Image (cartoon, rainbow, N blue to C red):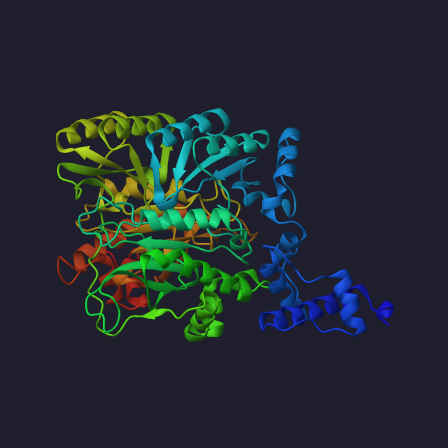
Length: 597
């Protein structure tokens, strides 16, 4: 009878039977035998085995329910990106860029073809906790000079990107990075992205815990556990040690927040990680406290179990809903955590009410300037990098300063800048002068210090505006016209992917095409939001203006800041607090050209 089925019907039957088999296997039951349908399906679509089995079973369950997999899932089942290295090398030898599903597969190795915006690759590294050595930064500069554009970008995941890499050179970049002790594996596509942590880990006078060993353990677990690559979409994990510089862990799928348990009620007092889940500010949600606390030495094991539940349940038919937030929304936190406990084979620890001490707060500008470390006579210097860009001379100069005057480490932050740590008191002035000789400062205006921008349309096909260039234009305009006496975060992101997290900025700008003629002509522009925040002040920004031309945004931002400074309730009222005190219509009236007069 199966010979009478259409191809579509056969595919449905195969997925249906595979889904039943997967569900029975999850309950410890054997396969159903004795039916022609089972035999036919088993012969052509056998039960998945090996490290990719969990993701393949998840795909089959969606098919069994009559739902169509997205193209990316089909591509991953046909050939996992990790298995494409030999074909990548061949493409490099031929000087050709990937096409079709291979664009996704190449990203598993950190190669991003950014056409049609640029006819080149962007290469994204993995730098756990954002910490690298002076010789690694100098080596990255050498690689960029030989194979890419003469610069590198610090990203909002405390990471580095090399751009303008030609088709012939992608493999050379990847292999030379391995020679430096760096890797790009899994830095893009549907993978667990660079692991972030408190940038001042181990040197911060107020931290509760040094996050570096835990971020590094998770980093190596990801690299060496293939199951962790079977995700339906990307996944972010961050460790915050309660230091002076925010790690923005509440914007991640998993946020491990260091807390002190003071009155255990059966739980051992000491430093634990509080578990927060489901952050994705591009979808207007922060990671929420689960009530669970995790011993630091168990963080990797718990994260592994969470990812495995996500692999089982993440949507593989709609990429807009294929994030952990939507699994949590569908299952509820209690049911999700029960499944995590099932993977662990043990109950999670809940924090009794009132047992956790208040966490120390982060500073708004402690990522720039000179700050004392917990080590006597030592300091970190936060270097200002305009929207995260360093040229080759600056990269090599920073590396030399870290080597000669610091402890040899360079620490990248989610604020698109870096720290040089271990500077002696007696060498601070010398290090500062050396940075200034490179054209780099360690201080900035309140506007420039809080400026964050994604790659933008000059390097990303999704972006609707050149965010980095426009960010610089905003800073240059405002710095010469208004003096702001409090930190203000201004985030520019080019598209809905929200790489620069526009929803959490005091002022957020989301790229948009602005119509300028009846014939459909458009120019660069933004939708403008206000009132975002993170940490204890977490909030999603509200849209005040839509489709503002990019050329008009510097003057608009100047007016907005001026109105706040003039009309705030007290000198201490922040821009966010001022925004929250007014309705959107009131803000639009005040910030508009007439309202500001």
